[in-house]
Amino acid sequence: MGPSFLPGAPPSPSSALSSSPVAELCACDLLAAQCDANCCCDPDCTPEDFSLFTTCSIPVVIGDSQLCIQEAAVYSIDTLMHPPERIFRLVNKINPNIFCIHVTNYKQALSFIPPEIPTLHNFDRLLKEFGGVTFNTESDVASDAQSDVQKPSDSNETARYEYGVPIQTSDAFLRLPAPLVFSQCADSSPAGFLVEQTVKCSRTVNVEDCTAIPALSMLFYTNSSILAVSILLKTILQLTVPIAVQSVTVQSLNGTRVRLNSSVMLQPKLGDSQTCMNVVLCASYLLTYTDAGNITSAAVSFLLGMIQATGSPIQQSFEIHFTQPDMRPVPLSGNPGYRVGLPLRAGSTNEYGQLTILRSTANQDCLVTEGVRTSVLFGYNMISGCNLRIATDVECQVTSQVVLNVLKGQNFPEYVASFGNSQAQNVLDWVPVIHINSSSDQDACQIPVSLELEVKWTKYGSLLNPQARIVNVTATVTTSSLTKSLSGSERTIQVLSSVTFTDVSAPAEPGYKVPPAIDAKLPFDFFFPFV
Image (tube, rainbow, N blue to C red; front, side, top):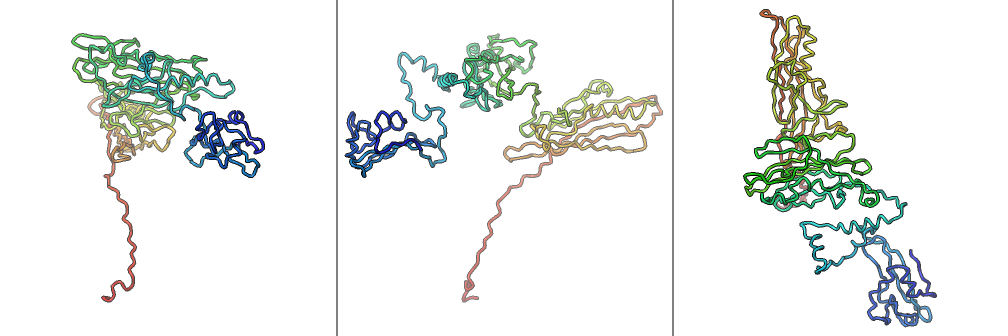
């Protein structure tokens, strides 16, 4: 409850106005400098006028009906007094609506701000601010930031980025081109903190104008610095992080890519035969952040290409990823299911990497190819091999271990990820590798001659967008008996390694709800007089 004024001491208009803003509201005050009849909130009325009132035409005045706690001015006439007097009280009412505003930290949002009318003096400024495809109220953000900077130092407010907050730069925001109508690129989409994006869009470009389009140049993506912390402390600390060029790859018209040794800034330029060179086809950002919500470094990698005067639009792709210091980014092979052609993620208890097999070389010598591995790609059946020359006086156990290291590698993984984005801490998302040894004779010297990997996967999730999930991985090592050769001093054994993918998905069956059971009871004389 708020302050109240006793009937014997009615407040003056000045004291009522200074007590609360809601006391200034009066919807029945229609006459200027005159007292309106039965208008108890009229500041022009005197106690003599209130003594003539029979009731209050507006007994309760509420400031904002959207607030959870509403301040209200209550007016009434005490007719028991002689003469009658007005009673005025300020009370706090609870809004019964569950959808109400608890704190109003942005007062301009509670009322409509009339737009600024264009004139000869402000037309150029309004055109620059609202003339693009999209616009924002950066001036409002800056004005709010300046007012927040003037707060006392003991306000206990920290400046940091939060999830989804637009990443701010020294001039505006970090913007990534994004597709709009008909996949056309719009260059004003802000990037959100910790929101990883991979977008593609098309852009219609005339070769003669390629040097005048900013989004085709590397400078467009590196000419600003990112604010390390919130804009609240920008004017005090000036903590900015420059955007460094991490790598530059140039792509020719036939698709051949060459990575440049130095990260130089190449500008678009016109070439021969109506071509434009050094056009940005892909830009990939990598931002490093801390647990406190501060950005410590920013880098971007470019893919540059050439365009011809064919009239067809070019396609650009843009990515942004986030990582923390002293952490190596783990590449994913799908999200969540595996994608065909991406490597299988595997590892042991403390190390995580990829599932690999022996890589075939030109000389086909197993001892030379030891340690040369190739990644197992999801959905691709693979086979590789080499030749092993064994002398007659070689020790069996040593040879067996060498061949086994050639087949499995030094650190053969114990687990394979079920999904392409399985995290290391989720134990249930990893499938153990089942090892099977197949030998013909246990008494003779056994040499491993083949490693067969069988990966069983199934379609998981919705029929509209099924995800590939690995359910079983089996590694079968087949050995062969080593017998002494009678024809020469050595013999040659062929060692093979293969990978087979098997789809074990069950056929999709439509599911229907159980039909309702009809529990109908007929009266005992329903079939009378027939039965």
